Structure formats: C-alpha cells, structure tokens
Amino acid sequence: MPPPTSVRVLLLHPERPVPKTAIDWVADRQSYARVIVPPALLQGDVLPARARHEPFAAPHPDAARVAAEAAALLADPGTCFRHVVEAAALALLEDAAVIAVGAGTFRDLIPLSSWSMNVPERPTDGLLVQHLGIAGRVPRAWREAAARALEAALSGDAARIFKAARDRRLRARREGPESFARLAKKSAGLRPAVVYLDLMAAPGAATPAFTGWLGGLEKERAAALLSVAAAVFI
Image (tube, rainbow, N blue to C red; front, side):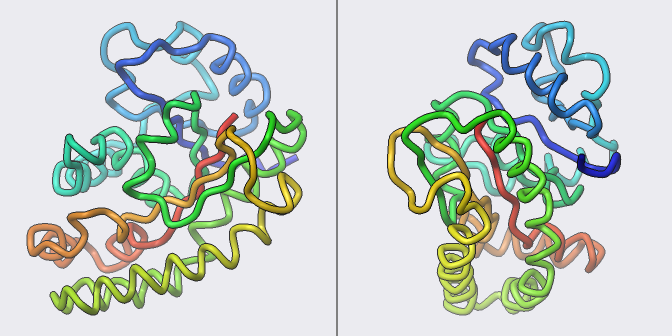
C-alpha cells in the first residue's frame, strides 16, 4: 500500500456531469491518500456529496493561488482549458499524481501533453492503483530537468525555451512507455490511460508574461512548476 502521504489531484471538467461511480472509486481505492479537489470543482453543486469528505480536500490556499495565476497566464479558451492548467499546476506543486475522470477529458489535456498512452480496455483496479503510485513519483523524477527548464524560461530566449520543451517531449516519450509498461507494451487502443502534463508544452510558455511571472516566484516553487506530472485515467 502507498504511504499515507500520497497526494492526488482530481481532474474532471467542471461543466460536465460528474459520475458518482468515479467518486466512489476514488474514495474507496485512494482512501489512504490526500485527494486534492481544485477550487473550480468546489463551487456550486458539481460534485457528489461524498467528494466533500475525506480523502477529498481543498488545496492549500497558497498552492491554489499560484495554480490559479499559472492558469490565468497559460489557459487559452480555444485550446487549453483553465481547469486543466490549474490541476496540472497543483499536481506539480504538491508532487501529486492526477486522477483523470472521463474519456472526454483527454481532449482537454492535449495542449499540455508531452506523451500519452492509450489502451484497448480499462485496466484492472489493481493496475490503476499501482500506476497512480508510479504517476505520483513522476514530478520528483523530473526535478533536475525542471531546474534546467527554469534556466531556459528565465533567459527569455524563445528558441531556447522551445528547444527545452522539445527535449522534454523526447525524454517523456522514452521514459513513459517504460514506467507504464504493465498497463500496455505500446500505446494502442481508443481508451486514454496516461498523459504526461508539462506546462512548458503550453502555447503561452514562452511569453514574457509567463516567464516574467515565473521569475517573480521563489526559485524552488518556480522549478516545481516546470517539472512534469502524470495523469492516469480511471
């Protein structure tokens, strides 16, 4: 069983129906974890009542603020929804895996995707739980690369930033299939399984507004935002 400090971030579209079965699955299968519910999902009556009790929890206010600021800078309504950037940023700040609900969410993740895997059918519950644990270790595994990415971002050199993003995509495409090999030997099928989320892949990552904002953050926090998080579809 994963350690009690495991952290997850719930990701679903705030304007789509929330399947109660998915919330029940998370509550039952991730009861040992802290499951962060992004602020957008806590408003109104979007979530079933069970999602307002442990293991579900609101993010720390400071992390929520930074994630919201990142989302406001990077989210283009035409290509990248704000709730996706917010969830990804929370996962990066909290060293968390993302729990993605609903196949339709896959399209929302494309602007931040550096690698993805599809499978023919839903993996077993045991495999999903195991690979959420693997996904939770991804942000720390990318911390060294994050420091290099931060240097590129703070340089303000768009060509250097794009090169850093490309190099990260290549690494993700090498390492992702190895880390998640038990889900599938190769990406084949129609059901989304795993997506690597990288803020450097966002269309606005090289803009002065975003890089300038990063430069104003504490260095450790800025580097955390330029790590990589993994979303697992349940």
